[in-house]
Every structure is written in C-alpha cells, then in structure tokens.
Length: 263
Image 1 (cartoon, rainbow, N blue to C red):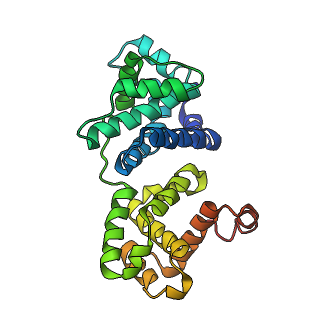
Image 2: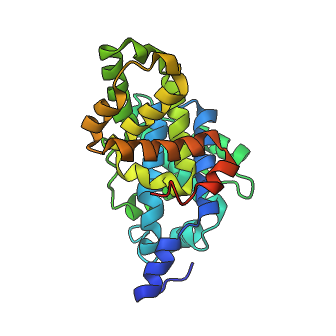
Image 3: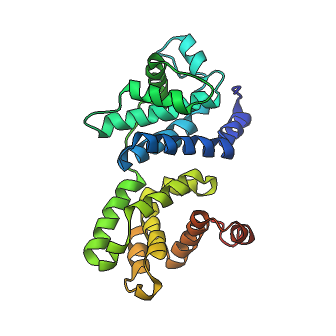
C-alpha cells in the first residue's frame, strides 16, 4: 500500500481494506474465536478492536507505526501488508481482548499453535506475536476501551426483557450472537456497530421475530425498543427487515428490494 496525500489518501483510506478482504478477515477472526472457545465478551471485544479500531486506522499510520520499534519490525509486519500479516493482527486482537477480560489470558504459545494451523501462507514465531502486539497498539494509539460494545448492551437488554416478559425465555443468546456475527461479516450492515446500544436493541427484535411464535406476540416490543433506541417504529422495522434479509440470506429478495430497504 503506497502512501498518498490529500484527496487520494482519503479515497485510499475509505476503500480500505475492501469488502472481500474485510469479510475474509472477520470470518478468520470468528473462526479463530470458535477454535479457541472464547467467551463472547472476548470475541466481540476482539472484533471491536480489530474491525472498529485497527483496520480503519492502519492506512493513516502506515508511515508512522513502529516508531518505538525497529524499522525491520515495521517492514516485516506491514510492508508489504499481506493477508497472512493481517490474520496475525486479528489473532493479536484476540490476545489483547483475552488479557483484558480473562484471569488467565491466552498464552502466546497457544496462539502460535493455532496460527500454524489456520494461517496458510506464513508461520509466525512467538516473537512475531510480541512485535505485532506493539505495532497494533501503536496503530490504535493504545486506545482499546471495551465498554461500548453491542454485546454488553445486548446482555443487559435480554436480562431486562426476561424480567418483564415471559416471552424472554424464548429468546436465545446464541441466536442473538449468530445475528451479530452475520452483521459483522456483512459490509453493508457493518455501520450498525457504530451505534452499539441501538444495534443491541435491534438484534433483540430480530431474534424475537425469528424465535417467538407469531401467535404469541403479546409483548409491545416495538414501543419498548423505540424508547430504548429513540428510533421511530417504522425505522426500527426497516432496519430489522434489512437485518433479517442478511441473516436469512434470501438472495433473490435481497436483490429485488435493495433500494426499498437501503438505509
């Protein structure tokens, strides 16, 4: 990736990393999370660090990250920036998240062993992981806060819902998390993660529509979510329909109604 200036730099950053590459990297991180049997909070924190912080900042930092490390480290890890290097950084995001949320964080040896199995084009050493962690933190300016994550709000909302309605027992957190995973992988719904609290509420509505039998739709879920998100009911249903189309993958319907449900 060559550094450019002015409008060319802005255009390059907006196109980075590309829909196909981003989807591949997030699928890789989700796959790694499953292989490591991570707790949800670790997985979603890692996704937030990697997709929400690291990838957007990387084009702007290509010429500056690694300032505290040797030039050779920067060259090796991000110049040139291949998929295997980005997959390494995805695992580093998992490593950092585990350090924040686990009493016993993942060991670098366990991450290296996994990378040897699932990164096809490159074998990384334990030292490479340590160097990549330094570069990762420099790219995100050491800002890895994890309180503003959709999963945290979703847990709280599901608890509240189960306290005020017996229908909450029909909602599975696993279904909610599957919805979040699909939305992360999908380029045109990734913007929802900029609004984690509304996204949590909309995910809950989507899970409600999918899981609760229609004849038992007693709870006024739309007014409740409208209060939570400040969205109009029409807007809530519009976004939920968009989410459902991606989760259920009716490709022919998605293509036909792309304009109607574009938001």
